[in-house]
Image (spheres, rainbow, N blue to C red):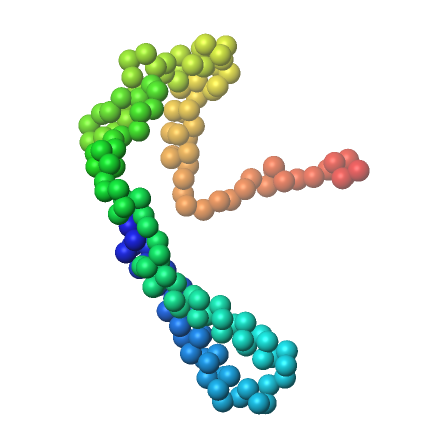
Length: 155
């Protein structure tokens, strides 16, 4: 982040801090003789921190040295590079595609000892998808037989 960007970002806190500093200065000028000692301490502490918050962009502008401003842009910063993740190669429009040596999901399950029958298989999933799309009427009406209880169930 550059120095000017950091200074601009600090304005988010500096503007309300300046308004709070204005209000606390007015409170001290016009009402200090009527305030209790504890209220004067709280108002003074608030004034100190709000003035520091209001002056923070100027302090950043004067005292902060960023590495890019002091040294200039480095080669690594000048040329952005895509992250080098193992097992991925760049595809069209920068999309990551599995590389040649990667196993597919089915091969990974087979290597782990899982069978398609244990996972439900493709046929079962297709049947469920077709059944849910055929029966979808937009409302849910439970079957009353599913919710009947015997006296034995309650004991």
